[in-house]
Image (cartoon, rainbow, N blue to C red; front, side):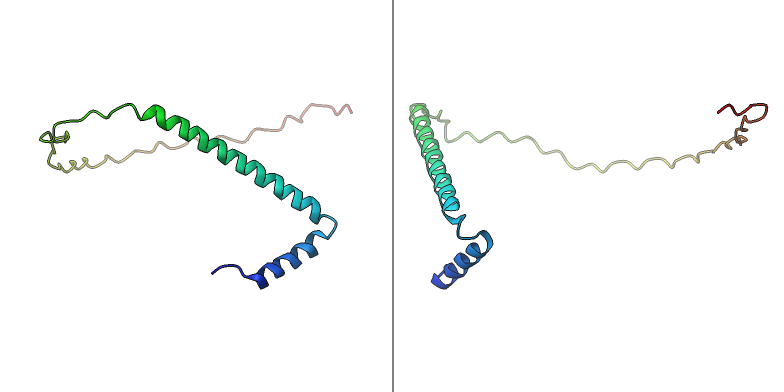
Length: 112
């Protein structure tokens, strides 16, 4: 579904309302610069690709005889893993109970 004239007018009105008429020329300049940079970069990438293609073209691929099959690893039959022996119950050692530390306020004078 292509964008028609009514849709473009609605988009233009929304942009003018959001950014104001004063900022529109600056935004248009920024978009123009971005498009120019984008075109220059794509042109550079295209030229680099064209420069690499002739360098790769002289190398002829090595031809193999048609009767030779590509190497395939021999298949081994599937062997199911052996079940593990039942686990022995873990004997838990009782945790020793430790008394909470006593506050050492006895015999101490408050020197503030």
